[in-house]
Length: 99
Image 1 (cartoon, helix red, strand yellow):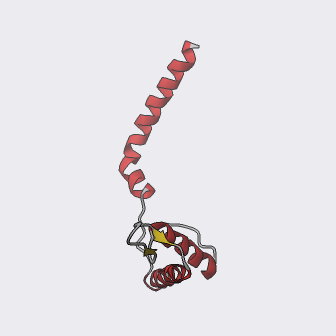
Image 2 (cartoon, rainbow, N blue to C red; image 1 turned 135 degrees about the vertical axis):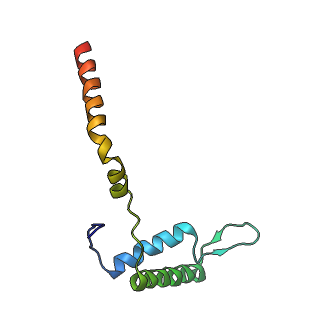
C-alpha cells in the first residue's frame, strides 16, 4: 500500500493503450530505406500489434516497478512546508494591504 492507485479497465483496453504507445514510439514498425519514414502497410500493422502484445504480456507477467514522485518529494519537503506557508501568507497579506 506504499504506492496507492486505482485499478480499472480490461485486457482489451490495456492492449489498445500499449498498441498506441508502441505505435507512437515506432516499436515494431517497418521503415523505408529511401525515405527513412515509417511504412504504413498490413505487415507493419501486424508487426506493431505483435510487439504490443508481447510488451503487454511481459508487463502482466512481471509487472512494472512503481516510479513514485509525489511521496518522496513530500517526505523531503514536509519540514519546510510551515515556513513556506508562513512566507506565502505574509506576501499575500502585504499585497492585500497595498490595495
